[in-house]
Length: 149
Image (cartoon, rainbow, N blue to C red; front, top):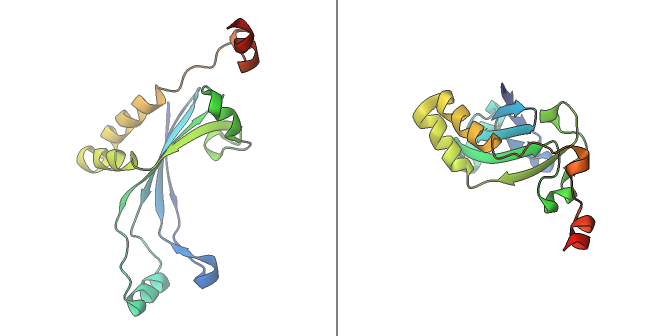
């Protein structure tokens, strides 16, 4: 299993382009796909902080963001419509995914309370839920399944 940590930079694009803080991405990748977890930080650019202070706006605090799965095949029927043609977490290969936002709070708590070891353990449990892709001759399509019913 490969563990990846990536930080995307904060940005300030004005009223038309938006503004945002830096995000920390954790990715656990293996042969069946990947699980990612995003931490929303309170790391803003100085000019963004000035805008917030000038307008009396509050900064968001660090918190758990999205938890996503990136499978190499659509293991749930509804995932056939979620194909990402070029998944950055699978080196540009297609993926089929799912995303949860509320569960990010649990992942964030694991990170804060137990550090990266606890987070990687939690991500491993999610990764283990991604089934291994069966051999092509073992995959039953919905149409074949309907005929066998």
